[in-house]
Length: 326
Image 1 (tube, rainbow, N blue to C red):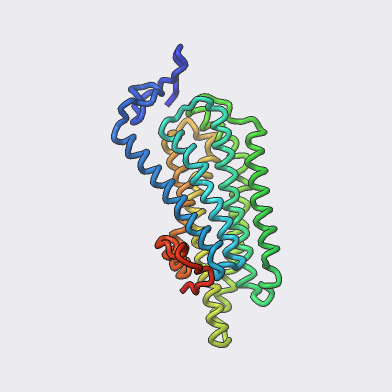
Image 2 (image 1 turned 135 degrees about the vertical axis):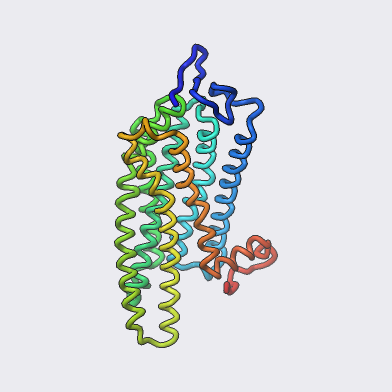
């Protein structure tokens, strides 16, 4: 789909688009039903992402029972996912549906910077969670001394600092100077390729190694456990928490891997890869930010209890911060 420049500065594309008048990048005065449905679907995705992660953030902040190191990392992850819904989704919706912007160079930079920063923040927070789980399962006796609030604070600070540096670096590097969708996509891919190895592949490999170690240790503990009933209960709770967070990481990998694989092979396959495919993979990756709250609600009874109290407005009718979440 190669755009052709006209004398008036519009761009003509080969083929039809559900949101444009005929073959120009002029937004239709009467958009098709497909265009309207696309806007509604992406808008709902944005709203669900924001609301779901707000529930996680409010739950961890409000209920004292949830004030534990692992949940502070979950809180940081939810903040990153919330910002994806607030900052990345609108720009991606604008690009996916309209494909060409005024001041497109600046918007491409902003979109690419937010996208890379927040996706990097998500995976670095997941990396920190895997470290937390490693000490909880593999070194339970020294867990509380090694993983405390101060250490968690340092982990979160480093995760966000590295992510911000990568995102700012994309702007400073001076990419995203093109016109309309072809150049914007190419520039976004170039900038993301420079960051994806260190912000995706390396952390994912580290996390997979850590969770493999955790799995082997947990299996060995399950076979040789000879502790008391309470000790067995604690061990079971730790394994459940580890399994749940491993599922969160697995969902992240399943959502993001196709997009990053596409980026890696873009230099040799760009002419063969339709823009629609790239955008679909991008939205699959972004949908990960919507799924995490549902995973917490499905596997954690205390998160379900917290969500119910927040949605029902019960926390506004009294002080329930010390409530026992079942």
